[in-house]
Every structure is written in structure tokens, then in C-alpha cells.
View 1 (cartoon, each protein chain N blue to C red):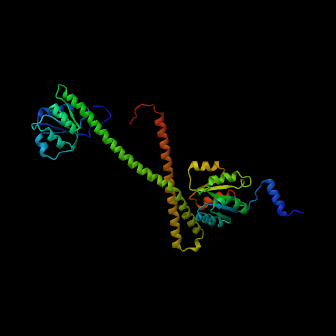
View 2: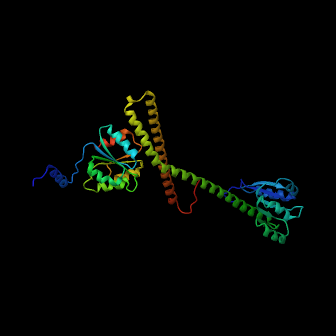
Length: 141
Length: 233
């Protein structure tokens, strides 16, 4: 039976464990819908394609469906905090290549250190300016 | 008097009708390194005037032998009562009613004994006063600490709210053509004020870290200092 092109691509992706990311697509995870909306608006203005998510339990599912090239991740969230989520993503062979930027109001040196220990690629402290957000995103997308 | 405690803020009333007694006692007290505020009153003055509150009363020889009546008037105004006159048996009975009454027998060394007992009593009074003051200060500090902790906990919420204010203001400023000059100025003001609040919050955060660091240093110094050595300053 002949293979379809999509099957071949899927096979290649599985084989290399390489996650195919969609250019300029940014996943924003924050339990506050207004914060999600704000970051979406700021990124859309710069030509990005942001996807907002307020439920941290649906992160893996959304990543699989949307294939973002960067994840903006809030730290303080109910049930599943950003540190924990970041650690789990970085321990997952399928998702570990996606850069994670922690976005949080916890701005102490120890918080930043702890974020790095969880494998975060960058760290933005709230409140951030538009320029700070874009500077962090542009590093990866 | 021993070093390390001051009796300058304590008051002593010498209640006697004998001038020599008052003069001798005052002179002996003035020879000491620390002197409380001394007031000498005779029996008549004590009865007539409004009684001042004091930390210690010394009852010397009085014409009116009604010691019970005098002690009754002293009970509410004096801390400790030292009595050098009176029948020991009567004083023993009165002591059951007035536990702060101490009898100093009129022996050869009575003045020395009286000064020693008075000194210790006044130091105890002073220590109690300082303890009460420290307790008040500690309670006030605990109140401020609670407020400070609350503010630190609220920092997260304030920063989240600020992110929205700052971000939305920036979004509006991205398209200035759509706004009137007045609206544009107002949004610019909101934006700069949000930045100002952010600055204040950051200063508050760095102050909190500085205090924490200073506490760590102070604790380390306390732990490093040899046990039992008195602190300086």
C-alpha cells in the first residue's frame, strides 16, 4: 500500500523526535484571561500568531494541535504552576525543543534562578513593557 | 548603684517630720552615683496636698503615729514603701495588708541598708517600666510587620494589574492617529503613572530584600559572637 506524504512526514517526525513548529505562532498560558488577551494584542500587532490558553491542564494538548514556536508561560497558576509545567515540558522529548519564556510577577533573583533550574529559556517580570515582551519573543521567533 | 541601669527617671518621696532624718538621707543619696528625683514632705503637707505618684516612699519619724492611716493613703500612689519607724510587731501586721511595705530597723547601719533596698527596688521598677515599654514596641512592630507582609503578598496582584494598565496603554499609543490630542495626552499620563507605580513597587521589593539581607548579617554576627559576652552600644 503506497504511503501518503503526510504519513512519511509523521514517520520522519517520530523518528527524529523533532517537533515541527509553526513559524510565528506563540502559545500564551496564563490563568488570567485579561493577561492572555493583552499579550495576544501586543503580539498580533507585530505580526505574530498568538494562541491563548487559560487552563494549564490543556497545555500539552494545545501544543500538539497548534505546534507553537515559543511558549509564554505564567508562573502563578492554580493546580499546575508554571515552574512545574516548564519542568514537565522540558522532560518531554517531544516538547523540550520549544523555547519557554516564563512571564511572572515573581521577580526576585531566587525566582529567576529557580525558573532557570526548571529549564526555562528566558524570564520576563510583570509588569513588562511591550518592548520587553517583544525582545524576549524575538530571541526565539 | 550598679552600672547599666539609670534611676534618673524614678521618683522618691521622703515622708518625715524630722528634718535631720530627711537631711541625712538626702545627703547619703547625693553621695551615690545615680540619684532619683527626691521630694521631702512632712506629715502635714502630705495630708493637705494632692499626693504625687512615686516609685518609692520612705517613711521616717512622724508626729502622727497613725501608721495604718498613712499607709492607706500611700497604697494607691506608691510602688514600694520603706518604713524606718514603728513597732516591729505592728509593722508585721500591717505588712499582711500592704505587701509592698518593707521595714528597715533603725540600727546603726540603717541608712546604708535603706539605700541598698531602695536602689534595688527602684531598679526593679525601672526594669518593669522598660519591659512594659518593650512589650508595647514589640506589639507595634508586630503590627507593622503584618502590614509589610500583607503589602509583599499583594505585590503579585499589583504587578498583574499594572501589566494590564501598562500594556493596554501601550496598545492604544501604537495607533495615535485614532485618538484625539486630549485622549492621547491622557493615555500618555496613565502610561507614565503606571511606570511610576512600577518603580515604587520595585523600590519596595528591593527594600524588602535589603532588610532580609541586613537581618541575615545581624543574625550571623549574633551567632558568631562568643556566648556570654556583653553587647556594645
